[in-house]
Image 1 (cartoon, one colour):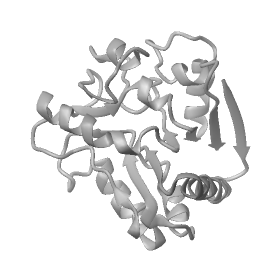
Image 2 (image 1 turned 90 degrees about the horizontal axis):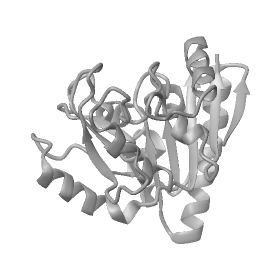
Image 3 (image 1 turned 180 degrees about the horizontal axis):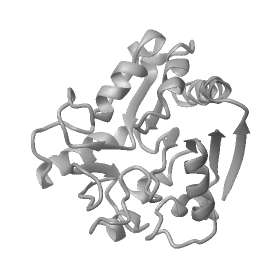
Length: 230
């Protein structure tokens, strides 16, 4: 299921979205003493990150992580970690804890086992913010990858897997669909006419192997809140 909210401008989206997320994090902290949020990379969330970073809440009780990460050095332009540290973990949010998905030079089975064990305390996520590629991928659940069936399996017991896309650069680490669907609140953040067209394609059919974002949009047990501005 999904719920679509249209905003008249990206600034309006960024500010309203930041306020809503800040309230959700504050509620989680009040209920259990801590909160966790996973965000996505790309250029779309920069304004939202800046707005959220200025919200007044108990950031020292918040853990921030990524829905996925490219296995590159942090100083690489492709690094989502760099993006988050430069744009979100600033201002009031500088006191938040960052859970880094890239912890070693090599992404191997030992690294994955270590990450899956260490990420457990912050799961399920209180807030998940997804993006969407023009091929319908979300996080690093790529339809072109050999790992797509494993990534989409609801029986998958691990939270994080290694993904090698065929149509995009860099080895990736990504949360699995099974782990992401357990998030308390799920958002899909989209901007621009191109993404609107991709969204309509995703809504027109339920085959998630072809467009993985469909696994969220057509899920009867999870409501994905779409935040959109042209």
